[in-house]
Amino acid sequence: MSDKLTDDEFARMVAEEVKNKLSPIQKQTLLREENWPRWREALIALSENLQRQIENIEADAESDNQRFLSMGREGSALSREAGTYYDAKATRVRRFKFHVDKKLDEILVMIETGTEMKTDGWDKVEFYRRAIAKHKTLMKNFNLEDTAIDRSLWASLNGEWLFDSIQDSNL
Image (cartoon, rainbow, N blue to C red):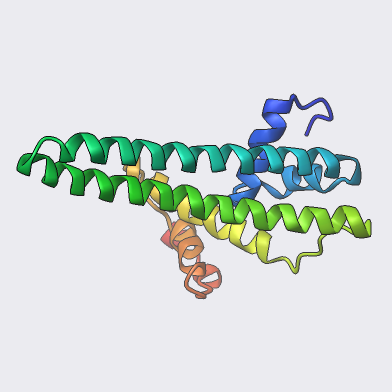
């Protein structure tokens, strides 16, 4: 990973890390101590942006609600539908903001203690689980024929080890 990441690239990487979608190599870039303050600033900016999004969603919901209710009975149904839409949208943003703020707390502790977050390897396990699942989805989406190797890989997601049964004859 380049040491010369632009602010936008770094911010995107921070957002992807909150979503747990970074490769281990990309995560190592963030975990370098010299990047901790930049990581903190990117998380603060992201949290503030998400807060503004929530406020805008709430304002839009209120505006639409008033407009629809002024339409009479027909507007009531529109108001309910819009309310459901805005609630779902705000909930998604709030949920993401919660994870951003949680990550910000972790980074602040790292900066304060001078100690890197220790992980027990579960982040890598989850990364590989997602990679295997994506492999299966892509194979199906592109109508590619799966092999015994593919099926063994997919079975590993369910805790099954089928690799030892692979032979030339079933490839």
